[in-house]
Length: 260
Length: 260
Image 1: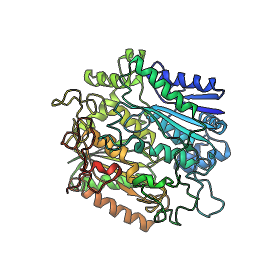
Image 2: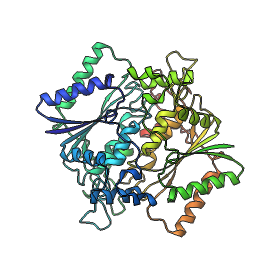
Image 3: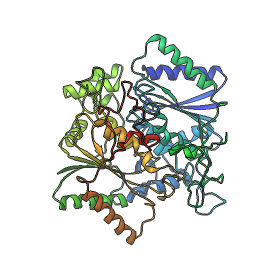
Image 4: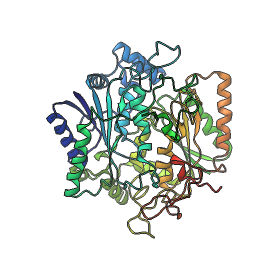
């Protein structure tokens, strides 16, 4: 299968860099084809602005989503954006690897979301069955792909667990898993989180490699997070979850299926 | 009082730009002093990398947090970073105004968090009472300040409410309210969310201004989100919430006090 690995760490000689090299080798050894977007190495432009479009008139009064819609449709986005879109179209799975900074992705990766995921393609895709509604949350042009977050954090598993002071790390990743991947139709697997990544000795490093290997081996077979689709009948006309469907789930998790 | 208004929208002639102008005037009319960081107008550098430090040796093998710690301490950060830190030290309150892009802040604002909030100042501040622990979650060098998110979203209040398909918008803002503001000691107010911001007629616009005015009038008097502090006795030695304290709260909200 085809895998796009998006890497957002400034230092290739880092722990993250070693894991990326290991992971790419692992996937290739299993017969997958891997393409990389090493955002720092590419000097990826993070800031979404009028310079993203070849038509200078967009900047007279910039509405980014409109400029993105027109630029995607007419082929007048800058080549760096179009090249990333081609990689994503090509891929069967996409991996985002990053250190968690301020409970989120580094700015350079946020800028990849902001600029690559164009209007009319990744969002604002008209739903042919319902006027005024878009294909999203499990549906859309990127459907059929899988996604996986690999992230390193300084905190412990307990402090970033269900009752930890830091909040549940998997909650903090909802904006990416649900808001970026699932929103555009990509089915995310549970994130692979590497805790206490600031203090890794040689023995621990080998354990971390083995654990990552197991996740990569399951990239096309593990069960994705069972998010509900927007169009599957679970939401009413106001896009509110119908009463009673949540089962024992509470909070954000009511958006996951319970009958598995 | 002194207010720092950080604005992250690419177009000053936008709905967001009008609200910013209105908001700044409102605060000044009430006698507050306002300084602005208009990130697009400043052409703010979003990407955290070795160029953020005057000492070129940091890039031999960049560990960003270490470089940030040393750069802050020795005054060898780039002047753009130091200038923003001075504004934040000066301020009694900080406002982040941005359009919600992909369930989060635009990359240019994420890059402000990544670069301005230096190690040894905004995080990794040793707790003098507990070896190996940092002052954070309600404590630290930025304590005593208030924070307020003002954000525009395309979706409806229902679709971004507690049972909406999009998830509860206030959950999606936890990485900023809790992970950036509260983490560094700043007490965040509940976010001010402006729904369906893509279709605002003149009458609706006036309502939106009135509603924003009320929030700005309460900037120094409204109750902040009642997050628990790390050091207040609610967490055990593993930084896990002690049994029974959550009351009826579930999910992330167990980190808020219930006895109010």
